[in-house]
Image (cartoon, rainbow, N blue to C red; front, side, top):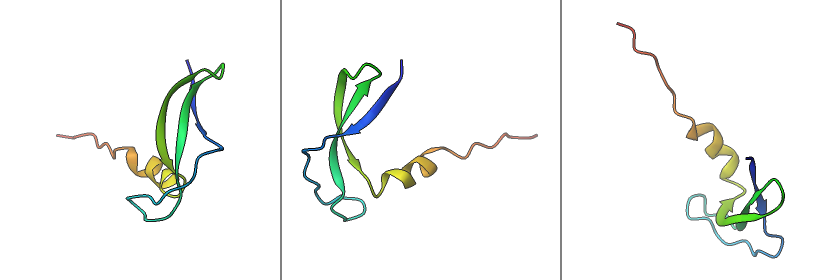
Amino acid sequence: MNTRIQLDPTSVAVPCERCGRSTLHVARLVREDGTPVSHTMVCTTCTPHQHQSAVPNRRIATG
């Protein structure tokens, strides 16, 4: 089952603790059919950078 993050259009942006910009919003995690699953906070400034840095750099040990 796929889910997506949907920004709440009525959410007021607040300062992000990480980057300091007023781009932190309430977002909903919703299923494909639009059913809400949960809420979270999403910084629209930090989020694109987190995706790249969140993937661990895996190295295969050679012996």
